[in-house]
Amino acid sequence: EAEKAKGIHKPNGVLADPSAAMALLWMRRMLEFQASFFEGVCKETDPNAPLGVPAKAAYTQHLEAFHGWLLKNAFRVGLNGLPKRQEFIRRLAPNIVDEEERTRICVSEVGDCTQVTRQVASQMRDLFAELDLEDKRKA
Image 1 (cartoon, rainbow, N blue to C red):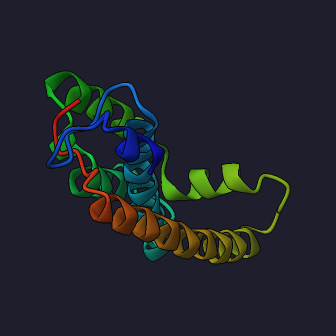
Image 2: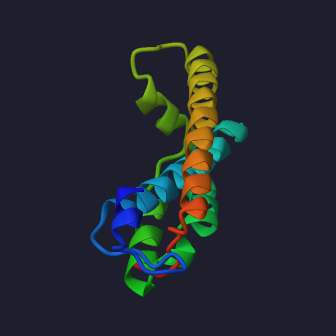
Image 3: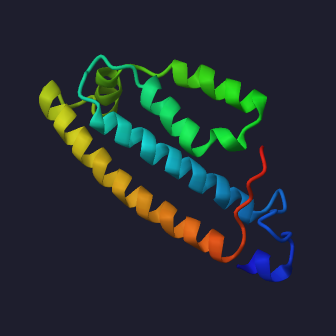
């Protein structure tokens, strides 16, 4: 709100860069990406499922439209390197030996975290819309 009041941003959501508003915009986009990715991890039941699939879906939904060629390709490479679901969950809770218990706990806690993340991102989205700070330019 302070930046908006100072007039450093242009109309129609064109943000000054660098600015706190720009940083918060990207933080929100990443929270939305993370929430979608984790929802995909929780919905998947095959322990050998590659996590690149839900990660690419989340990327397409939340970030791709704002990335130029270089960032799009960097993300594709990175997302292709994600482990399978079972390995990912093992890394989240390496001290829980029983695989079924580990999966149950991780899915439950990641699901809870995802709900809160969605609420935070939604509040951020509403505030950015209200203040006309939704910059749609590519990075």
